[in-house]
Image 1 (cartoon, rainbow, N blue to C red):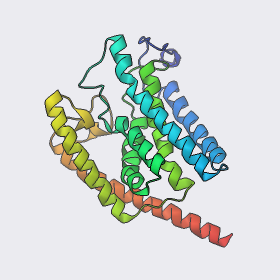
Image 2 (image 1 turned 45 degrees about the horizontal axis):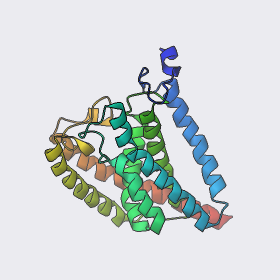
Image 3 (image 1 turned 90 degrees about the horizontal axis):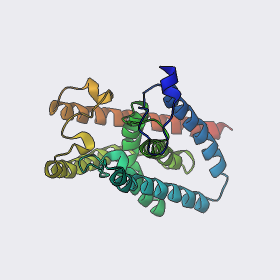
Image 4 (image 1 turned 90 degrees about the vertical axis):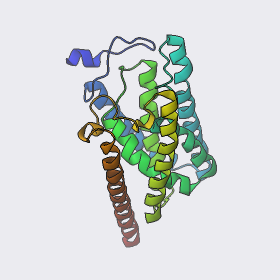
Length: 248
């Protein structure tokens, strides 16, 4: 099994399937943590305008990487309109991040912050990617999902952006509006974008929930509770950092 886990694909090769919690998966998660710390420490030394520019370029790169999936899947003959349009949360968030870093809009950032912490982070620990690196879709998956976490946390860590309690409500309402729009698109496309029509395939957090449509209601309650928990932890950490600086 270990031999299988460490074998890698080429750019278009589909020989080796990805396995959660394999050596490859653990290497990616640990590697990201190391990169995250290095990136934060290095970039925060630069003027804020330069930081913003670099983060904007990163968001644009992730957007291009995500959109490139469409022509690449066409080229390899596997394009599926029910799966490959960027309507899943992790797929369209890079585009929103472009707006966040182009305008330094705290409100939009705070709205999607909970989506990143609760949704994108979960996708890194229970990934749905099919193939191992360095298949092009594996590159896209990991770059988008890991770098979104970095883009989501950076303004809070370096720029000191705050989360307010009303951001929890705003985030929940916005998510339901987006889900409502995508629900009707799913009806047209016979798809399951944003997993509002059924639970995602494979073993993920959603596997623990009841079947559709009950799981939607349970998920709504979980989102509210977890968002409040994230806000509480965020405020607690911020408070401790402020108190520590005051003592120093």
